[in-house]
Image 1 (spheres, one colour):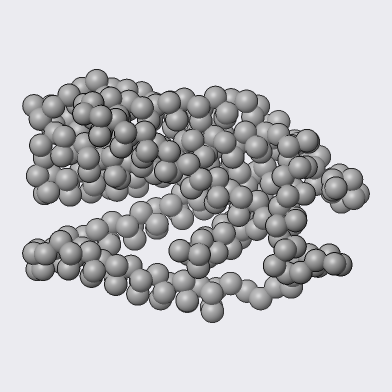
Image 2 (cartoon, rainbow, N blue to C red):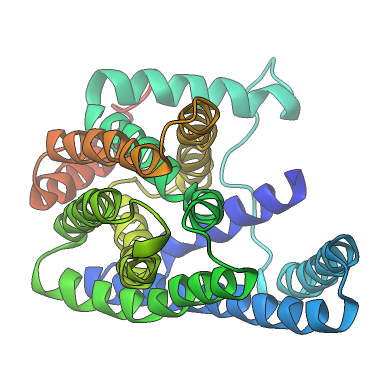
Length: 322
């Protein structure tokens, strides 16, 4: 897991260097998202084929893990050895500090700077912590919800397939929305879509007699999931200064995974308390609402770009440091 997270941070750190054009950046992030979901879809289809041959859930899980490990090693290895170009270190290790500790001190200094002068980045971190934390729990919640609705394993596979497939038009839709509005406004609209769709699902999905409606709700959840990530990454790349991409992408990665456990915990408590699961589903809207509020606190997208420009100018003069 540590190796995977290092790979993700390094990969994301390259994204701001691709282009300064917001529209092109949105397209790059959408394409990146589509490739990621294509890999997930292919893995799902292969595991489905294995399940028909193996007929043993434990054996299927073992083959799935083996496939993921080999797949990841091949693609990550190729990227590290052939795609990432050699470059000199962006910063020197301060005197009196080691390579092990310098990064932590730098993050602490940057956090103080963000808190005092760039608070909108802190609001963004909180927004994705709550929003992506809730969105990341859908896979486990959907499994519990399908059991609540009395759906078969084949119907569960179809539900997961719909979420994955609908993420492709969601990623394409994000491009259209970012061009028409801007990445931050797109992110806000996705939060509203997630909130409204989850409220409707909580009201409608009351038992096995309503199970067929879950396919419609899963389509919109997948659509939102496909649109959320490109908008979120594009917004963030337009906020962070040059020269600190890896540092900020590291804290970005931490933020969107920091609260994944919390919605699951609330859902599990509701489930163990014998409360109908549609109420547990409704609890996710607390996180979507908080995420939306923090997004609004950040200010307009134009203001964020102007703030970044001023930040880089001050940094070039040595005025943005502790």
